[in-house]
Length: 467
Image (cartoon, rainbow, N blue to C red):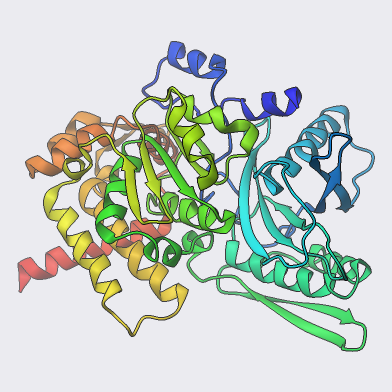
């Protein structure tokens, strides 16, 4: 257990372009930090077409210990990797040690049952080299008679696409009800298939006894930046007003704690909050479902975004934590706040986002998750377009092709006092620093969709001036 705890205390946060060596060193030596990668994984997780769909499929089962409690253990792994170098083998061992904790983060007080509603959730793990892997999980009750324990099928991949992997887990669950032996050829076929480009489809052939050969079509969403998110989960549980308070806290990189009992609710809602930050990426501690043994994460003095099961609320509130926003997803309310959330965002833009989100709530014509994702994402992308969309105009390029961001001129160019007040705070965040670091490397915009929206906004402004 000690080695696993040490793995999760590894610092994630990379020092920004404005942070000195002392701060970077302090971050590395802070023992309280719990690394869990970046939500959404737009920049840090590769999205290139043609990659393997996944690295591993593991089954995590509960094994009864001598004291009567159950402990999660990996009972199946595909594929088995051989001939690894020493460093690769050590990294794999750490990864395989960590996975069970996140497949059963709700402790070891289990008992065999006859009924269990399957649930889907995900987590993110960070390797020593900074690369990240996502675990897509389906917890279910194996077919059979009498009482039995749930098990988790977990697909480990470096690709972020929650909807696509949920469909894959549907197929895995269907085959599990027949036989474990039927899962292997399906996953083998999937592993041999290239990850499709946005908007494209890959077809997997799979044989099922008594049903014959099935053709399974897996289609990747057209908008790649929205393929790891379901905003509907957030909108169903929180009012637009509260969502804006949460967004305001996240955009200034504060500490956020989300509470719910279901793992799937925590997972979906936290991914959705993180996705609201597009084109920026949360660059701090990020754990959609905190394992019970790591609840002291909330004592971290640094920014974090974590999900905790409601049963642990009292333990969390008893922790000596600093100021944090605590959100109850079950009752749709904020339990604890800093108090200035209403004043962080420019009031005019805040009201426009509120109008847009309320329009969604009152629009019965919007049904699909894709439509909801597009509408919600548009509102928040427009916020960044109108506050920092002029960033590229203030990167000074040298003859050797490197760029230098002119922060003072960038802030001074904002005519609105309320916008400028917000931006002066936002430019000090790590997410903005990392975004600018990438922008300084190349004249080609790093986030094509964001750049497209900036261009459209300026064209619309020019059209209004000319008409």
